Amino acid sequence: MPLTDLTLAECLALRPDLDEPADLDAFWDRTLRTARAVGGPAQYVPEDTGLTQVTTYDVTVPGFAGEPVRGWLHLPAGAEGPLGCVVEFLGYGRGRGLPHEQVLWATAGYAHFIMDTRGQGWSTAAGATPDTVSLNGDVPGFLTRGVDSPDDHYYRRVYTDAVRFTEAAKDHPAVDPDRVVVTGHSQGGGIALAVAGLVPGLAGVMPDTPFLCDIRRGALVAGAPPYTEIAEYLSLHRDRVETVFTTLSYVDAALLAARATAPSLFSIAMMDAVCPPSTCFAAYHLYGGAKDLKVYEFNGHEGGAGHHRRAQLAWVRERFSTPRPADPGVSTLHDPQLA
Image (cartoon, rainbow, N blue to C red; front, top):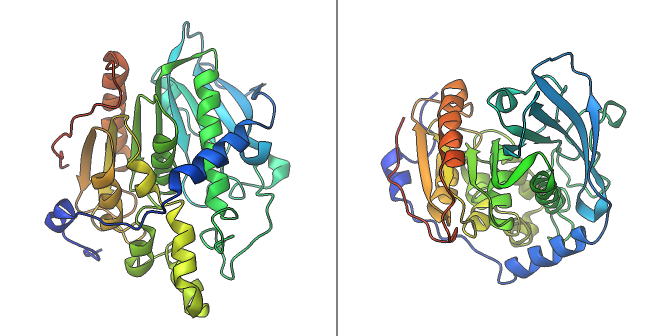
């Protein structure tokens, strides 16, 4: 598993210059205002998992266009008072899974929301969230779905779902709204960065080997899917290059991350062929808030795995035990911590 991208020294020195749409903020303001105007309140139905130390709820939140987005809420059994909360977004092709599968954050004493990703979970009969829009690219996958227009693109709907899901978490009576961290691996990391740029007042964000960052470079250098979906699409549609990358710039998580102010803990793997490290470093360098970094020099897309989870547990505990600054927009850049 050799290096397939820039070296660590080159990535640390990288100064990305991404093309940003002039109306990016207006686009997302319009999108989110429209979503907030429709749909009812979030719903929580108790779920019997057989676990005695974690209480679980089947969650339904109105997302894009008010459409129902499913998920899980895990709470430490018997916990009192508003809790710190971790909102988690999932990797490419993954749904929310079974209710007992991911309970780490609840066993650490926090509320844990897990969002199902529309169109990527199990069948709707098993409680997955469908993607109700039928627009598709000409290659399998999600990156080219609705790629001819920012209004139609698949990730416009996903990011909106994620914002509404995070807002529902902040509104839940078991959650302290000032202690909410968003996280995710790969696609989930890209979604978390987008949410950090679109939802004010978060306590932190933890993107792991994030996808959807510097998307144009990802399409040029990634050796494995999903970025290769774009290259395959453009090999068939040679005249659509600028249209495609203009659309994708509206959902580039690196650009949205530049608007974030919450503290962050990034993880990046230097032998990652799925999310090349230079694309992840683009988001890291552009990130608008305070930032810490763990680099895994000899790992692929799995990144730090359980080793990094331990680092995250310590980082979240520190965030939740430290008083929030009076002005969350003022941040200090931390030196990278290499692991």
